[in-house]
Amino acid sequence: QVQLVESGGGLVQAGGSLRLSCAASGRTLSGYTMGWFRQAPGKEREFVTAIIWSGGSTYYADSVKGRFTISRDNAKNTVYLQMNSLKPEDTAVYYCAAGLYVRKVLGGEGDYWGQGTQVTVSS
Image 1: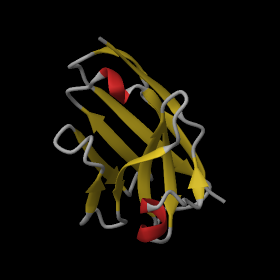
Image 2 (image 1 turned 90 degrees about the horizontal axis):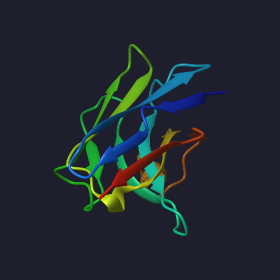
Image 3 (image 1 turned 90 degrees about the vertical axis):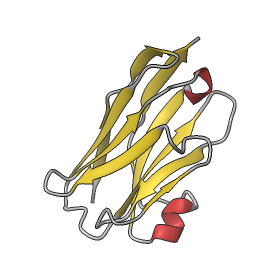
């Protein structure tokens, strides 16, 4: 079993930056693709970004390309989401997820999910 814990959320002004972290415990994330998703009030959860185990491939939603960067430190069992040039429409609860299959993670089907961290961007 894997436990995922997100941190780093908060309140930031538009144009600012935040760095989210997702730490895994319980077992190694060896071979797992990691993803970040978000859910704004009244909206469905949406894919933000994902990174495969080796870090060699990353995927981004069009809405965050060029502003967000995903990375991982496998030695620390941690994945990061650097968010720059934040916009009010980025306001949401951000969740990290882990899955063995890239396609499933990209489709929102993670094997494990964190509890989420709130990101609020003020205008």
